[in-house]
Length: 134
Image (cartoon, rainbow, N blue to C red; front, side, top):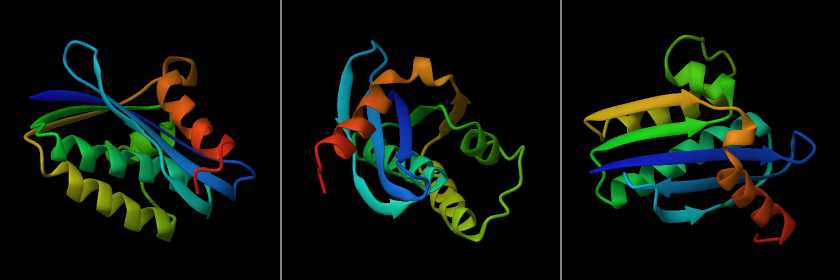
C-alpha cells in the first residue's frame, strides 16, 4: 500500500513553542490520518524533522510499504535526499532517526513543495499551537 505523508513543523520564536503537523493520504487522496504534536521549546528545523519522523512511524503502523513524503522544509528534504550535509549535532541525530524509519519501507520518496501547497499539514501545526494542545 502506498501513502503520501504531508508534513510541517513550526516554532513560534525559533526557538519557541513548537509543534508538528502530519496529514497522511491514501492513493485516492483520502485523508487516513491527521495529527500534530506539541514539542515544547524547539527550533523550526527540529519540528520539521520530528514531523517527518512521526509521519513515517504512523504510515508504517497503517501498513504502508511505499511512501511519498512531502514537506515545505527545503533543508530537511535536501538532507534526507543526501544532497546537503547535516552539520548541526541535534539535526544529525534526527536525520539518523528519520533515516532508520525510512528503511522500514520498500520505497520512499522525499520531495519539497512550497508552503502554499502544504496547507493541511500547516493547519495541523497551527491547530496545536493555537489551541494549547500541550
